[in-house]
Amino acid sequence: MASALLVLALLASATTPDASALGQRVQGYYEKTKDLEASFVQTYTYSAAGRSQTSRGTLRVKKPGKLRWDYVDPAKKTIVVNGSRLVQYEPEENQAYVDEHFDASAMSAAVTFLLGKGKLEREFDLSLSPKAGGRLVLTPRKADARVEQIVLTISESGEVTDTRVVDGSGNVNEIAFQNLRRNVGLKDDVFVLDLPKDVHRVKAPGQ
Image (cartoon, rainbow, N blue to C red; front, side, top):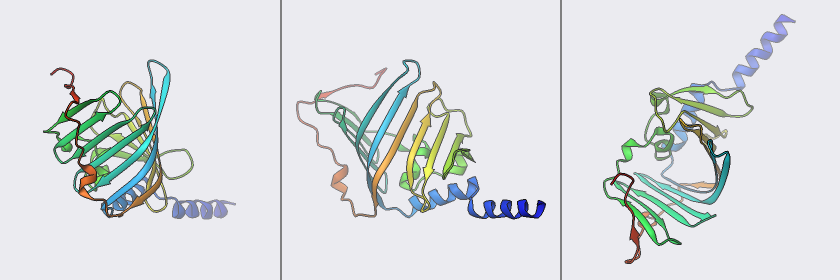
């Protein structure tokens, strides 16, 4: 009986990667990704209010340093990061926020790994979720009010299919990615957002 249990334990350890191996798998997948696009469903749950909001849209990423989120539901909104320029545009309100000196290095590795930057094991303690499947739990090594815990659901190839981020206030941001395609040859102009001349430019809080 003891030998049978030992065999089962060895089989389990051989087929289930440890947290470090799973982290290296996802890191390697995105380091080899030049660009990608995917549709997404985002569910944001407000802890204090006890309510959730679901949004849908498309994500595009290209190295080096280019991100574009196009929200189509429940309201249209586009967020573009192109090097040191960040633009958030809401066409229905005809308003935009522009930061010409955006510090992309300040973004967490929870985002920058999509660009092949940042090292998950350098910024987070890694562990496996007790739930079934390839779920990697990331806990920041340094206290950060923006991120208390991240859970990545990872496919056999290393692709992230779902992310779940809990911030210091208990709010939960969950994103499920679908129809992901990578290395499709996205053009640079995809990440150039020309604003209408009459757009209302809003300032960041405190400015």
